Image 1: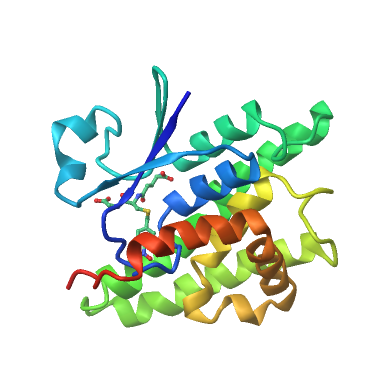
Image 2: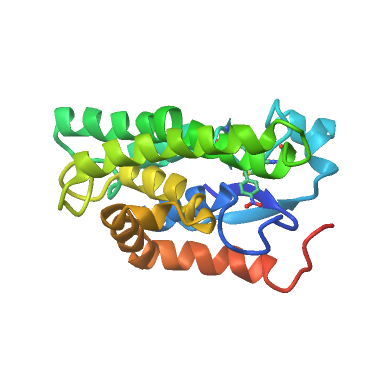
Length: 217
Ligand code: GTB
């Protein structure tokens, strides 16, 4: 059955791979699954046809036969459950890998998203200069804990898993800020993720769509 995902018609990052379709592409590449991409404009995202797939009018979505999914974490989990390569066979190890998907999205990513908000959406507010260091401190706190846990291991729990795929993707969002490089073991962890052939293919595929297009604004 054909798998179709949605992505920005024109990603605001101009092809840096930070939009979340890259996470889904990466999972599909790790799983060896072919997929098609339907590009959606910012306007089309808010129209009824797309809202039927994604109640919040966002990308990515995932369609396969009569199954339609939204939420990147759920999509990656679905792919990982149905195909080899992203979750271990052992039941306990599998549960721990799923825990890392949730930890990446619920514990590590929120302060990182706050940084995006304070810098780009609230940058003109009088209080934003005071808020920024508070947000950066919260990120440093989380990265310090994650770095301590990872130690000198390659991946979070044994072999590479969907938990690492999501965690690396979350940390990548931080790279432009320079904060990631304050934690060399995490920067190396992210680099290991980026070096995976499946990531390279996913990155190249989104770049092919976005690189030649000027970003909006
Ligand atoms: N919780 C949802 C999920 O995980 O799937 C969040 C989905 C989401 O935030 N989608 C964004 C979107 O559709 C694109 S990925 N935004 C349009 C809208 O809400 O109208 C987030 C994103 C956007 C831009 C960059 N960037 O430019 O670097 C990076 C990531």
